Image (cartoon, rainbow, N blue to C red):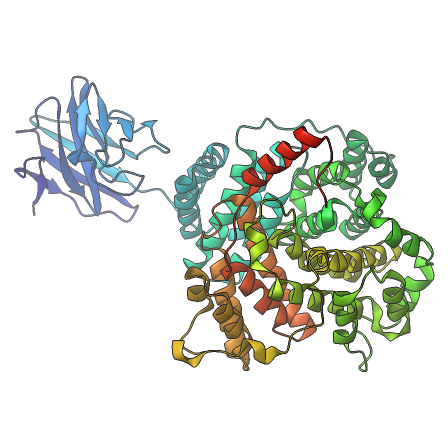
Amino acid sequence: MSESMTENDGTSVEATPSEPRADNTATATVQLEGLDVGSMKMVRVGDTPVALIRTETGVHAIDNACPHQGYGLVTGDLADGVVTCQWHNWKFDAATGKCLIGEEDVACHRVEMGDGEVSVTVTRPTNEERLATLWPSLRRGLERDYVGQMARDSARLLESGATPSQIMAEALRVAAPKADDGIGHEMAMAADALAIAEVRTGDDRLLALVQGLSGLSEATRDYPANEVPGGDPSINIEAAVEAEDVGSAMAGLLGRIEGGDDPAAIRSTVIDAVSAHHRGYGHGIIYTQKSFELLDRIGWDAAPDLLPHLLSRIVHHTREDTLPYMRKAMRELSSLDLGTLATESESWSARPESTWDPGVFADRLLQADEAPIVAAAELMGAGAGVEGVLDSVTLAVSERLLRHNLDVEFDNSELFGWLDITHGLTTARAARWAWRQHPSPAALRSALFAVWLAYDTGRSERRHGRAGARAPLDHWAYDQTNGTIETASITDAVLWRRPHEAVALALAGDSDQQRQAVTGQLLDAALADRAGSFIVLAHLVKTSQAAVEEAEVVGSPIPVAAAARFLAAPRLERFVARAVSESADFIRTGAPPKR
């Protein structure tokens, strides 16, 4: 049998291939007539299109499909032993397949010369052999922030039997040590991206996974690895964090990990350390939650690569409870016996008593002139429990998102915006996690910090006289003119910037199947590259994931509806514009911005 090998100008020469053998090897014999020095032709060897290239140094064979997007290399240029893909100017060494300009090499195949002919042998690697080359390739893509390479390698890795958790673990090993001042939003988004990927199948896993990889890579590209001290289990981790001694905190943690301490005990120690202060507008407890959730998915073996850099971030966070705007709340908190309160709250088990109505305290939070810390504590001990109060926090913050004035997003003099409110929801979720993992005075303190944050997310409302109780749900009734709940999509509502419709759709589902469809659409919308910058994308993903989880806990679609409005509503990513406005004011007046 014979098959043709097409030349650039459409002419062909004959190739006589063999059938692919059981060992995944195929060979084709190709006549050299018409293959002049400086020319290329394509031939199929088994199922593989191969570019046969003749240079001054001999005859070479590489895959014809450019590894970038699959365009044929023989339609490109050959000069001085270098093949250039005409589509995007990637360049390859014809003799080795090494990529000279671009992101990844092209496969090179064995050529044996005969009398007027060559024998080309293609041997496709086993899954194990593919994995051995794909892991280093993925690391190179992560180090250079090559999104295309990360996506292609992730797809190949999944096809070769790797799991999403293994891929994310490899990415964390590359990125976490390079995170400036410790891991942050990139790690939190990676945790949520992996959580989404692991409940999906097939190619649906890939977008979530690669969004997580991209965030890790973008945030750490070109940074050197941070120095990590040797482990010393004698160091008190909490004391080192309190003293802002990063090196000692890392050493103490590594010492306990290397010494084989129980992971649950280490988790409790970190919760105790992070909960001593309200750190970074809630990010301290959020990053702690996400780090340990990641380790639950990728395995405790990754703890030495991840947790020291979590402590670095915790130490570097602002301790907001020491600042003027939290003084009143901290005086109330200091009046409480957290040990007794934790015992009383734990007696109500994981959930509050049946008579508890979280909406009542949510309305109080929404209309409060001061953070009701003592009132929240009294409710915890009287039957609501920690989780019942956190239900109220979730409902209150969700209402803030539902009624956030969109004009604020276009005012560069206004420091408050969408992202500030989302922290109230994600912090409530993290405080709930901390309490479930380690019911203790420290975790209870984090829950009370979440109460303060729910109050603080209303500062723009109070400033402009718009604070009030929750709106009735029928305000968001679905407009049937755009279709039915079965045919309409939150993803489309987000894409076309229809926030009212997005909220109505989130509230319209009344069956388990419809609610699952709604949450899937919400997460699809969060992952769909509508943010424009990594930091906003990270907030879209983590807010949506927290909303889905909190909606299930509180038994209400309100958190999902709130996240849907956040995703769909107009917003300006005014980081530069706001920085310019603040800087100009400071230079002129010498005064800090009004919070």
